Length: 278
Image: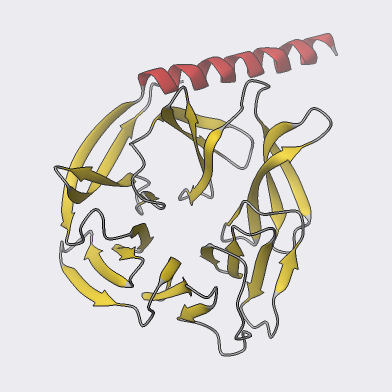
C-alpha cells in the first residue's frame, strides 16, 4: 500500500513538473496562411473548421470560406441582419441570430423560438446553446428544447459528452468535468489548483481527440492549456492576444489555427507547436 501511495505521489509531482516545463519551453512555428478580406473592426466573431475548410464570419453575416488544401477562398453572406455566433453543419452555416433564434442549417423539427444564449456548438448528437443562465440541448430529431440546469459554460464533443468548467465542491476550486448531453455528471476529470483564480476564462475549441482548450489571463498574459479526458494536462503555454471571440481552432492534423491582426490586417495563421519530450 505504501508503495502504491508513493508511486501515485511521484506520478502527480512528475506531471506537475512536466506541465510547467512544457508551458515554459513550448516552441511555436507560426505560418501566415491567408489574409482575411474582412476589416479587423468589422465585428469578426472568429472561425470554425469543417474538414479542410475554415469559415470566418462577422456579426453582419458576412463570411469567407478558405480551403487549407487548395488555398481557394469563397465569400458569402448569411441571411441574417445580426449573427451572435455560428458553427458549420455539412459545409453550411448554422447560427444564432440577434433575437436568439437558430438559423441556417437547422432541423425542421426544432422549435422556432428565441433562447437566452450567445454561443452555439454542434456535435454529432445535436446542438448546444450556451452563454445564458443555463445551457440548451437540441437533440437532432427533437421537437422541443431540453434545458440543462446549473451548467452554463459547456462545449460538446462528438461522443455525446459535454465538457463543463465550473466551481464545485466545498473548497470552491475550479474543475473541468464531463457530463452527458442532458447535464448528468459522468466523470470528474480535472481539478485546478487553489491558486487558479481566472480572469477572462473561456473554454474551447475542442481538440482533435476531444481535448478541452482552456484560456485565461494570468498576470495580464493569456495562457492556454489543453486538458485530456483522462485528466492529464498536455501542455500550457502563452497564447496570442485575443482580438476575436473564436480566434483559435484546430486543423485535422492537430495544428493550432489562429486569427491574428498584423498592421490592421486579419490573418489566418497556423501554429505548429513543439513540446519537450516527457
